[in-house]
Length: 105
Image 1 (cartoon, rainbow, N blue to C red):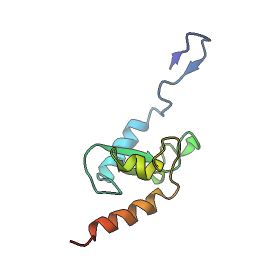
Image 2: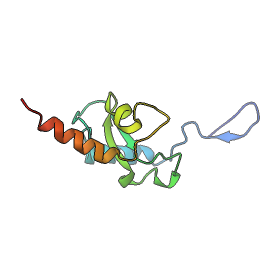
Image 3: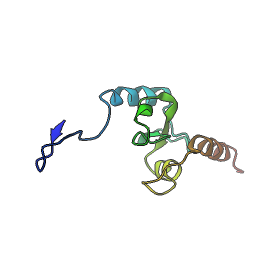
Image 4: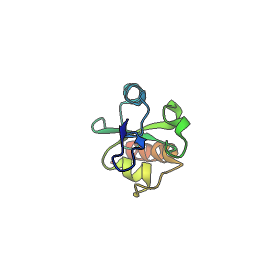
């Protein structure tokens, strides 16, 4: 923690649990590709229900989904608006990936 110089109230720099890094790493080992497009590079671990809404879910594996940084994280995870989130992100990604894999050639 560091202290806010103006009022000396302690605050976390990133607001993450000390265990986040290891949980994120383990998730990417288990789910190494984007759930929406299948990419395997530049991956993000997205919280299905944002951890600032429910901090108890920050490290819950059932609340995580792998999305590529561009474009799927913003599109599927946040519905093209960083302050929003997609409650149906898992279902939407499954449908989209199925369509990608079965598109007419």
